[in-house]
Length: 263
Image 1 (tube, rainbow, N blue to C red):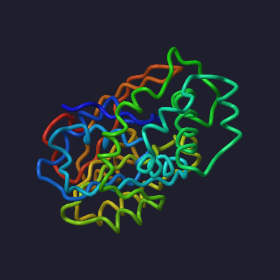
Image 2 (cartoon, helix red, strand yellow):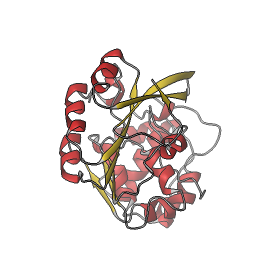
Image 3 (cartoon, one colour):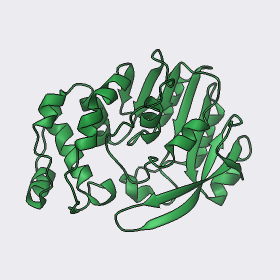
Image 4 (cartoon, rainbow, N blue to C red):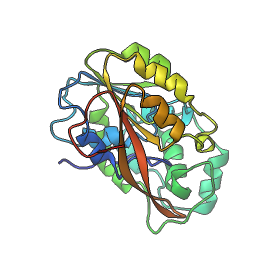
């Protein structure tokens, strides 16, 4: 395994389970990889750290409806490491709240602002308040920035409705990782919830393969269980405020090779 790539964290991110999810990818190759609900795209970042996956010819499509997240992925492809290293990464409460009140459209300044607010917030939720951290944040991001930019060389970064993205990039050689806002957790995504029926209908139309992470919910399991495979995946969640161990629902339209348990 290569060096793990770091960018930013987000509530509900898949950093801890990304290896098991990637191991459950189909064994057949794919020419296009799509995350319609990218967020911090921890699964993509883990996949990109693997020496044989994705192939250099694979097109990467990352989409998110949150404008700040879109800006972060777009900006990181066009900034210089040297300029980002010169930014004041040390944690400071007054500076944190100064950044919250002041924004910029310049890519380096905008990316630094978004990252700083994420790094020094509770659980990466930059809409909240300042969280004192034991050490300066940003070091791992700066060290692996060249790897991240290389992984994004053939990427498409979008800020569109997930259904439009799924329709446009679907093909028999496309693979989708779907991580929609969970049922009952819409407030964590600025109210941007997803209708599970609409998501189910979009999945039914796919030519390509997909794997989806969802929270355990009777309505979701009954709906997606009509046509797709359902599995359970034990997930440790650790935030600044609490620790929890839950089982998430994994939905696929193929039989995964490993790492998940049938529901």
